[in-house]
Image (cartoon, rainbow, N blue to C red; front, side, top):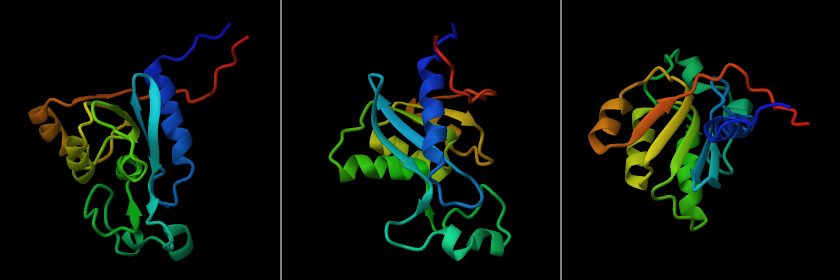
Length: 158
């Protein structure tokens, strides 16, 4: 019999599944916001609702040769963490004191939103090239960890 995944592994695997909806040509990022082991919202990186995305229009950041982790404002996409937080507000879901699981660690813009949304913990799978969030999270006591999963396969329970 296969071993069941830990809660952290389970929710990170779900974040990777959510990331499959991404319309970004550079990174597929997914986020899942959870409280008491229950999913509250999800989000992936992509263009604003009813606008053309990078799959249709091309990547402006690639055209301008902007390195990953820099100049976030030059992008059509809304980040996965932002979309997950926005979905909470849009649907009237309280995300205070929740945990955000994300495929990538947050950029500084997302980290500010995470702080003001009242999220208490962030678990990422891999490190994004922008680590400016760390000082902010330390200052406000938001717990952060990375998993570095090697195996994203779905376990077969017999």
